[in-house]
Length: 267
Image (cartoon, rainbow, N blue to C red; front, side, top):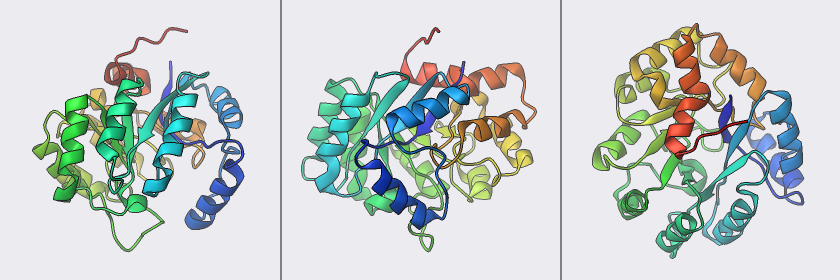
């Protein structure tokens, strides 16, 4: 079984414009058309059974519409959705409670697009609310092409959040911090956070990735691709190149995700 814990897609009418803008910013060609149907086809071709879709409201005005789409998509086909809370929205805490009541398992925060550093104290009330609600939070971690001059969620920042909120379930994307992997090993490995493998094939060396898995523990690592920015097949081939044991692979491919989500997927 394979669960891709880090994917993105958009409403059909918005997908061409959203993918075009993001592709221009990142310089990366997408591997899907960004729609649910197109994404599902690529997931199926890649052997993915279930996929967690990460939604991001890049400004407070978008939050309600982004979450409306997330709620519509959640549970359809292979998709499990995380909602989005924008820290600057006046009703951010109420929106988090609404997402929990509607059955979503977590929220995605993207400090670069949402304009904050992960360890800013003004985020404390939001983190406390997510913790009390039992919502998992996934952070974009490390470098992002949108703001390459400033890393808004460094491994040290995320370790600080985990220390301040020990009951908050935290996922640090991109093996803990895209292109910050030495800092991941120094500041984040061994902390009580999850790491996902998204968009690391071809950028993180298999040797360092294998070392992070060994030191952090496969039970706290989630398979993710960042589809449409990397094919799940490419991400999975990278995972298989690490020389992991069968137990470690089972944890990363699906076991860790099932335990985190509190589900038992059978196909």
